Amino acid sequence: MTVLIAGGGISGLALALSCHQANIPFQVFEATPMLNPLGVGINLQPSAVRELYALGVQDQLDDVGIQTRDFGMYTKRGLHIWTEPRGLHAGYHWPQYSVHRGKFHMMLYNEVLRRAGPDAVRTGWKATGFDTQDDRVILHLVDGQMHTHSVEGPVLIGADGIHSALRKQIAPNEGAPCWEGAVLYRGTTLAKAPLSGASMALVGHASRRFVTYPISQADPETGLSTINWIAELNFGTDTAFDKGNYAQNVPLEKFAHHFKDFKFDWLDCPSLIAGAEEVFEYPMVDRDPLDRWTHGRMTLMGDAAHAAYPVGSNGAGAGIIDARKLVAAFLKHGLSTTALQTFEDEMRPLTNRMVLTNRGAGPDEILNTVEDRCDGYFDHIHDVISEEEMAQHAAFYKRIAGTGISDTNERPDIVPEGAQFAQQSL
Image (cartoon, rainbow, N blue to C red; front, side, top):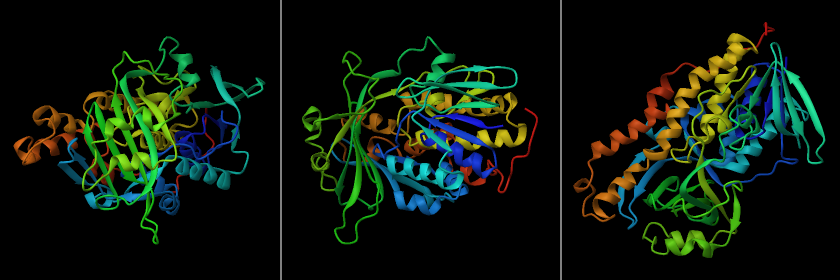
């Protein structure tokens, strides 16, 4: 009766915590021999934070990040286009968080071990495939020494990321992730946080864009915060990049000169870039939506199911929502094929729309509209684009992603408080 979880990333660990909370036996298998706090900044929307609070990690979130106050967009000349409040400041009942991905990941990992015991996550075992039968599923694994191992259970959840082996088994002709020429250069720098001190800022347009936000509180003595930044360039698909190596360390001279003029009285992008100890290169990739996630007693979740461009701050949050929806389905239908299909039927249409929307009409599409209309310069923004047009676009994206204020505040709990799993028919 153990839920098999292939992958110990954010999605898989959120599922593990959710299973434990509902008294559902589980086992996580993670390919990495030892988990480390890797990565840079990510954002968690209130819809996901609501679920994390329900899991009892509210205090830990404040330890690994900062509550985001607002989100603003600026032209390549540093002129202000639009700012909207975020989280509690926008009327949500829960905050938005900007966090260090690695610290957040390790927080979830440590919580799983603390609550469920040191054997709840078996590291060093990579999923290679599965076999599904009428009453069980068999997960095949391999370790770093090429030793193989197989385990069986009533259901298997593929949370093994954008290069998922389980996804490849059910979509063998899919090929490499989709790439349209954009590359992200990402780093963190100790500096004074601009604007409100808890602001996200997007500068530029689709071909050359800079994103920045703090992921820690300011040090009371120095006033410095850890600032996450992303320098995005679009080289076109004729340029060759290694999409299999998702995060390569690169020298500043590879990209920094493209942002030397992004220096304004409120933000100094060249200084942020220069202050980073290391910078990572990420080709911006996603996956085409699948027409199914579930195969017998296996289904996909998180990036394995719906890897999307990192716009709109929905990547990690979508995986967290997946975890909660899966547990809700288990509580209602047992560890069964019906539960897996119920989960997919609800989440696949929503996340498929999000993947496709992020490719061309994400929340930052306003930047491109302004650039096209005025080359990034204006005397008054409303001569270029109306407040109503910007508000309509922002609301449109929230509807697509399901992260609007009413969507988040007024919906019932995904997993009812105190709900516990009882022995049920498979």
